[in-house]
Length: 594
Image (cartoon, rainbow, N blue to C red; front, side, top):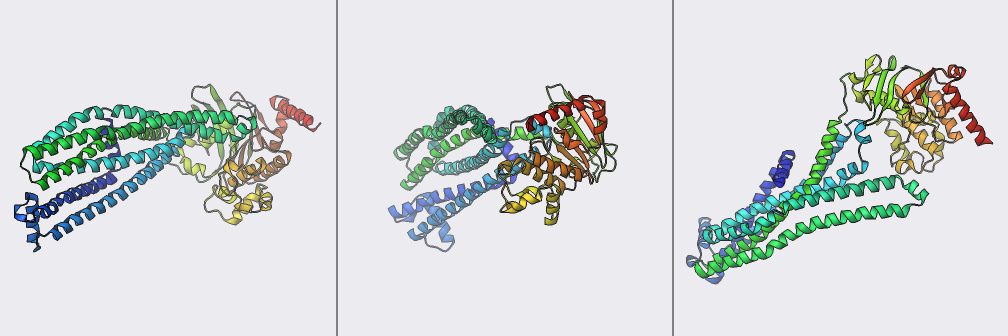
């Protein structure tokens, strides 16, 4: 049942490819049968030389030739036989090409469809999932699903060939053929039941592959920490264990697949020999027809083994397809909600009215927060780690939906806007700088597709990145490495800021843009932020309080709530939490300089 379900699922998703595959398989089967049947006249003419005393098959071929005004000679019979062989092989080549084209088309469509579902999902889909599993799904599991479609093509091709091949011995002696089929079915039932075992083994393979992909993703991402801690051997040992587990699962699954055909081969040969013996010993069948019958049955028996093996192998591959569809369905369940109102630009500002939000299974990260971000102003959020500052930015970005309260943009709920048009007007510099493994130029172009060189230069100058970029030997064409590893922290941060500036954002969100920078880099970033504050609306999450001295308004957060608010001067005069934070940072700076 699982195999039939899998075939139906693939047919429903790829009907055109499926139907074309069946048509080509039918052509291969017909040409194969014709090539076998056309061998009978060649045998008869060699043995008897006289068409009139030959088998019924030969006499029928002779009749066709005479209708075409051709002599029923050995040469013409041989030409017909060779033409059918060429035709069969031509269809085989076409079928194989279509099979490979189908396989990689299926892989492409599955990956694109799943990838599209992933990137139309809310951020919560990514933040709550295992990145290694997502990676494995888009690589190994998609490839296995493509293989499944190819195997299904072989299954249908073999099944059609089997039906057509059986028509040959049926026309010669239906009794012997029926006996051979009955024996074949009797012996195939135990092998048929291996499908359940294959499904379980396939499930084990998928689980093991997920683990391998997750470990590789984690260890490569944490390579610096692993090298720094000197725990390379521990990482290698963990990877080795997971690879061993995957190896065992894969070997078990593939051995069972390969063994199915081998198990059936001696059974098939025995049945064919029995049929040959009965035909020759008890039935007055011409030798040419006996040989054709023997050849057809001999061809059928391995096909039965292959059909059974491919059927069981589809059960083995089904878990890979299931994982793809399950993750795709999960992504669609988390689909990003969006309104129909196009966002053309910020007119008044952004406001949060008593917004409450909590991550699943946790207490509220943001609790009844109200704040305003007027257009053209720089608003700062400060507080200890875990106080909810970054979550506020995520809510303004529309990454999460409030459990209570409302996020308003120009006095209109954010949920009513087309979220994608809204985000195209936002510049965002996250806490962990994200650069792609390509050139500086291509990283900057992520901010805007049709950006000119002049716009790139101006943005880099505003972010104080222009100078260091032009000091590099390849300038904008410098490869930054994975996540920008070939650049310093300050350089990465300035490129990220330039990328945000290129968008000419209506709203610029900066999440601790200077938290891990040296004094020189911090000064340059701070200068860039102050310059930008004259042109756009900024919300900045700050760890170093010196960077927000020029902020128009500051909100101090603690345990998800706003506990103080005001200008920099007002908060210092209040001598509250903010003033205490300044004193602590001043002491740290003095200790560092001592």
